[in-house]
Image 1: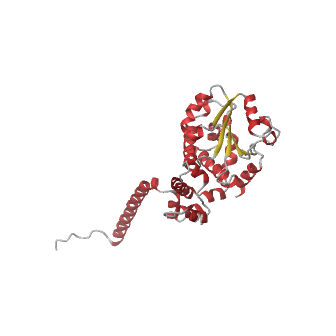
Image 2: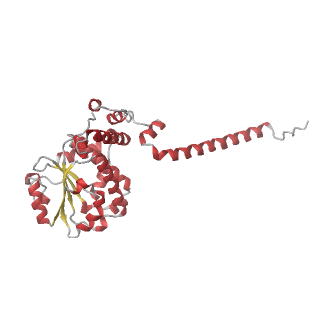
Image 3: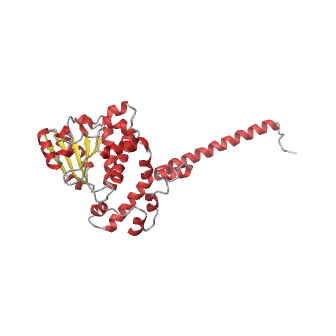
Length: 311
């Protein structure tokens, strides 16, 4: 016979076969990882947690997910699921309900992907870690009954956050959590607006690091896309003389409708006078010339911190 002699003993053949199988498994794993890496940018987190079997029990059954899954939803169907077409979406689209519905469905898909309900149900320990380096507060209403949202921009310290192990994505996720709390918990009425007060006292151009600008750009995109027309006015107080330079840097991040709502007020005296006109002194914090409770002690702020700790 011309057949070559088998020089391998049975045990050697078994080892060689096992090695070949391991090589094949590694090859298949490499192909799988390559395919997943190509697919990953196109899929949302709900896809991957479902694929891995590690989704929260309610992650894919939330109201937002059920509404987003509707192929051609009617307003009645959305209302039945607790996700009615919001008034602010209709207002943002100039009264065109058709365009507003298309936009709202995109928002519902986004809400499903981030897990809006489960996000608020989980603890948010970064609230206490971020707050000292970027104070943000929900406070008592203005004279028209609108909640006030205060952001102490001059106290933003991205370098301190970095020293405490906080990353840009932590700040972004904190913004999303706080935004959901504001609109889903504190101001649940979809026609309600909030008055925004941005305090630029002690602000320096160096505050706007490349990292901060990137986070602000991500946040601005989310707010423009999914929470349009929710601010009644944006009051920039204690603005330094050169604020126009900084405003030009962030102006592209603000929608045209928002730009029309912005009022820049220079100097402490002028700022306090404007605040007293906007907010009754009994609701105005003492640091701003009022007799109300300090920032961080309003009922909504206390509830927010309680939710962040114990939910």
